[in-house]
Each structure stands twice: as C-alpha cells, then as structure tokens.
Image (cartoon, rainbow, N blue to C red; front, side, top):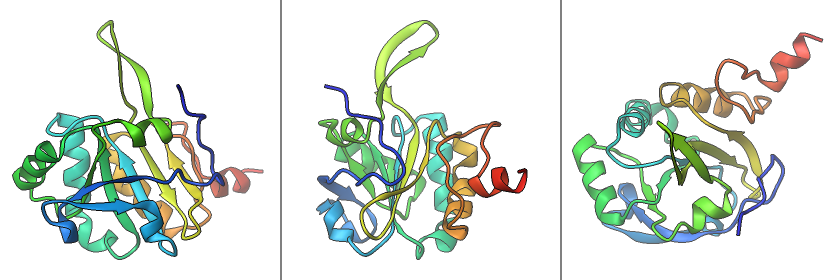
Length: 182
C-alpha cells in the first residue's frame, strides 16, 4: 500500500511513536495531536550515522539555539531507539528523534520510496521535511533536501510565512520569488 503524496494544505497524518532525547529522555511516547496549537517540524532522513544524515543533524544542532523556540522539531528515521540513542550521544544532538522502525510514519507521509544507488534498487526514506501548522495541516514541504541546505530552508520557512515550497535544489524558488518576477 502506497500513501498518496501529501500536499500543502492537507491534514498531517496522525502518528504515535517513541521520541528520544531532549525533554523525552531515554524514550517517551508522543502523538502529533499532543502538539495541536503549536508548529511542528518533522524532518525525515534515511539513516543514523551516515555522512549526509550526520551533516544534516549536526547543522540543526549548531543552529538549535536559534531554532528551538520556533516549533516542535523532530528528526524521523526508521532506525531503532537504540540506534537513535547512540547517534544522539555521539554527536550531542539537543533535539529529539522519533523512531519509526515499523515504517508507519514514512509510509503515511509518503517518504518511503524506491531508490537507486549505484544501480542497486531498494526501498528507503526520501530526505523530506514537513512543516505542520498549529491546526495540524501541512504548511510547507521540502522534498529531496540537500543536507547542507536544511538549516537555511528551516530559517527561511520559519522566518517568512509566505515562503511556501515543495522543491529543493537549484530549481527551488519561493512563491514570493515567483510572484516578484511576474
């Protein structure tokens, strides 16, 4: 079963999973509905302790003081809680990670996709970030995020409510940028 591709304005799929680190310590169950009335950022990444995912997590760690008050921010991967605990400890990550070892979140958010690396085809997580508004709707989507651009995308999306995007990379332009060219 493949989930429909989520769009801006869609209701964010509800979830229930274990959060590790930050105020959740060694693990505590959280649900999206726990954060109704608050902005939530879910950033999906492929795997703990890989070069791109480490770069993305450490970039967020380094900008944490600036970003932490703007939303409830969670990293999400299919890794186990044990893997998350090691990843958090190794890189001193101050933000919580969600364990999705049963792949419920990646499938419901439509980021469990066919991938191809060096000719090998497999299923994996597409690096995607969802910004969910206080009413529980998808406000912004950043697909195929480049790890070294993630923090700048978050800064722009948090700082500019008109920055509405579904692309990443060189073709990325905000709705405001496109309107200014008209």
